[in-house]
Length: 419
Ligand SMILES: Cc1ncc(COP(=O)(O)O)c(C=O)c1O
Image (cartoon, rainbow, N blue to C red):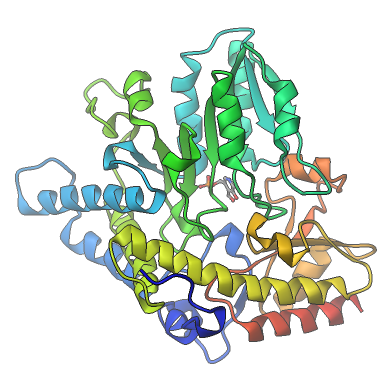
């Protein structure tokens, strides 16, 4: 297998040709709203459409249409297993969204907890990995401890976790990559500490997977959640769980539904057409591995793709951060030192000393530059950073289909807006 393709050789024109949203006009919008949801390649759209024509039957029937739906279901779980480094498709639960799956699984996990048990939540989380656990704590009388991130390193440091662990700690809900600051946590080290104390570790990798390839077994956690609409696929959530744990937990399901894995945690009729889109998404990423000179298994091609676009995205991020740092009144809420880029994804949030984040985002929208303003459900990070919750940040999120020219246009627009 080839190692890292130089960022300069990244096949950006071929990549962009895959995304119909980028060729709808000669001057498409500049999509920097990627942390809220990415564009979708044509092959994913085709797979969704094809499934709606040829596999619209329910699963488990005797006839061809149903067998095609069965095959789509299995293929999607295998694709997600390759993407996350899971040992088998049985460890992959697919559902409506990360939040819905987490709320659902938290009920089963709650069956193993009792009043007085302790859970640790972090100040870096999106609400999807906070509110389900707060609701559980309220229902069961659990005690909640809060793990901060540092304002200097922008990460959660293991020494801050140590004093929170006790023989009553039952769960650590841990962010992998922040949807506000972009920071990537050392999940392997933090997981190891929590596991040592006997706690379960539930990792939110929603913002990581668009930029880095996780390896669930190397991480040592128990659950890892992500969402395919954040990595160029359809609106689905995915949770990987350790097979022995998923077998032991009691599922909240209807009586006649299968008790096999992963079906016991997938409630209701599966979204077959979106599952077809999920497989096509992983195949698109594997194609990108091939296009950047990587071969081997699908997982190896995926690794190659991610190495290639990490280097490419880092170049764009470097320019965006450097440009923003030169602007008076702009403060970047996250890691700025390029030597530390391995510890962040290219989600760049900033505030301005006088202008409202919403005014800046609206002015960008007028120029067809898509960006979010506000707390983006990262309530705890906004609070820890001392930001006005309603104002939050302006968030610019790079994906591998963005270009250097788009970054220049965005910088010029922001310079004009902030004067
Ligand atoms: C870090 C993070 N976690 C969780 C979620 C929630 O994902 P979903 O929309 O699939 O529920 C998001 C969505 O923005 C997110 O950014």
